Length: 337
Image (cartoon, rainbow, N blue to C red; front, side, top):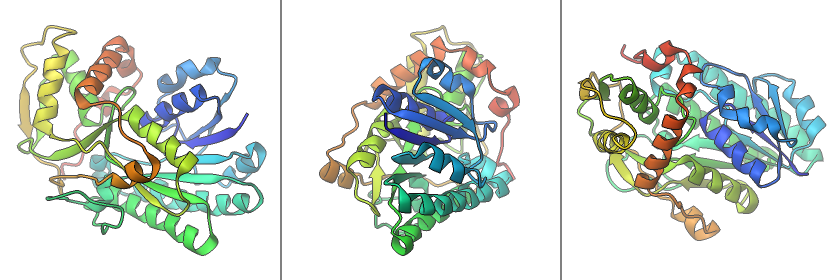
């Protein structure tokens, strides 16, 4: 059975990717350092799989070299990262350590491993590296203009990977994806936080005037794209992964309110409340994903209305998910300065 390593597999996208890989009969080794945003709830159903193994590991650790040579994976999906912009405003250090130093260590060890074993590294990044896209959509050759410490750390990691491809002929590919949503997402992010507040009769905090626009993609569509890139993507290339569908925060909130009515009667406190905006908040992200569509034949299959319905179904069916998290991590406002 062919082996795949997923770093950050206790997280949102990582756990959804593992689910898909297991169903496609890969043997998956999940490497995760188990921080606040990691959650064993996300992988509890994988315990019954004989082709799944979890190893607690920070990608900054030298131990990763032994793991590579022991399991000899044909591919690595690097999703290990600090991701919350507000947290990066309060404490950039952990983002520098995980997203830059950690990726450097992974690259150094994968460099030696890939010289002796055929393998491929897929480094998962974000559309936030491009900064504000007020008009049009950012393509793969668009200049990086990150606005937050988080986005800057991801931009640095992308450049590191690209430099290793150029200098060491490292078999690696970089992907930049738009905003993900779906099951198993930590409620520090907009959609699961709003769902939590709706469930608990709390007001719905929206930054600024709610006009910040994001391109939204259902997480399983993203994971399908990652596997397609792993199988058919060209070494050294960058691929944007997006839905081509933008909605602002107010539009997202209203769709959640409408969809939640099918599961519960909304409480009297469930109302939109505008709060002080995030420092350096980008107005709009938007990707041009023509490359992956034209070159690899990938298209998203889940529109936003269907995706939100599936997302709400999961959270209302898995209310205990929120209980597995620290309440402080759910309700505390970060990044205020």
